Image 1 (cartoon, rainbow, N blue to C red):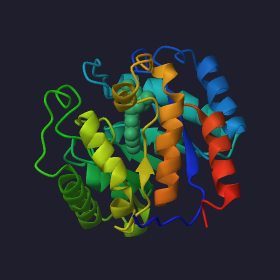
Image 2 (cartoon, rainbow, N blue to C red):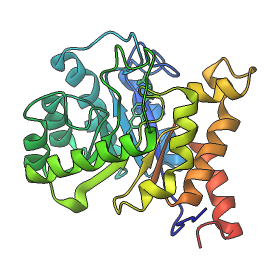
Image 3 (cartoon, rainbow, N blue to C red):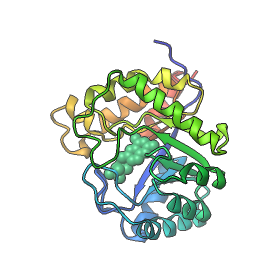
Image 4 (tube, rainbow, N blue to C red):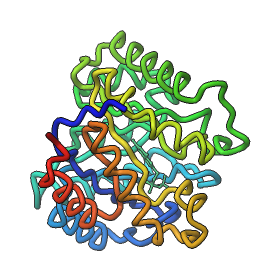
Length: 273
Ligand code: HH2
């Protein structure tokens, strides 16, 4: 296997301001609790905070743009007032991305890869922010209903390259684009493991790669004692250290302190050289 290590990946800490996210839903709905959590993640080692106002787990209730904006914008503004950490907005809606960037976000993390609104690529270009294009099979409500691929790695790779071309055709600068294979978004455990194993191939595409394996269900498929998402720290760390060795630019995690420590040890051993 050819590893492409060059640096310790940045840690992106997750702050979900939602009642129903799969691992931290409901915990940070109050603005003060969300701000305290965000600042704790910065102190713990997060270089980027990913703020989400709508859960994408299968069966989650869709949220109107106005409600999503009301959840995320005050938090982004409050974080901006307290810290210069990079802020990412996790949304599929151009109106939410626009409001978040106006409040201080510099990265639009779109799990729909700018597919779910016809003007999304143009809005991304107009905002001039960085954009994460993530692979998802279909849409959140049905993505986990018997997902099938002939060749999951080739199909995810082709999808991401096509979405990058669409974004660039709309005016998004190439250097603003990140790619993410979308662990858990329309994938069986076997698909997720194949995509993880193929990370060097995704890194070789020449875009920064973001990897989000934190507390995801494929870990429970490998460990019968990990039914509770909070019991998946060991598996999350293993996946993210492996991703670091493959040369990803950032890892999206809930357990920021533990991940930052693991990456520091890995880097000190020489993993990033
Ligand atoms: N995973 C989740 C949400 N957003 N964005 C990117 N780029 N990559 C991911 O792997 C990713 C993501 C799912 O995790 P979480 O935010 O904890 O849950 P929910 O979607 O239920 O809010």
